[in-house]
Length: 131
Image 1 (cartoon, one colour):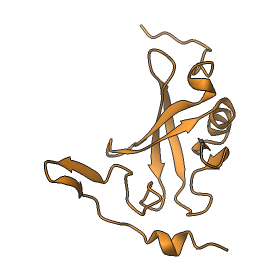
Image 2: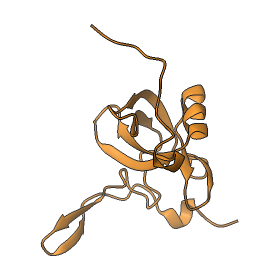
Image 3: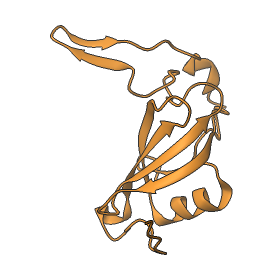
């Protein structure tokens, strides 16, 4: 039996910012973790495109607005405490990471230190040229 409630994420937690994980809908690979506030969540639900909140810029961050690497949302999940959001997405452009990798998790911890295990998809210096 399934249960449906009208309640979504609890933005009263985390000072109004909740972790949001983007996962590739086809492969299951974790692409990135960012934050959402109530406004970015509402826009994501309304448009079907991932919108996050940039803590450094203190504004909405529409994924791909500069790079073109947008995320089309296939499904949205909320954890048991309603304080973490999981988006399954179709990643356009092949890279979720602003450093040019498919996933932001392109470094593996080894006894020798961090090892880059991902392949760069684009050159960030070319994509994010300052105007």
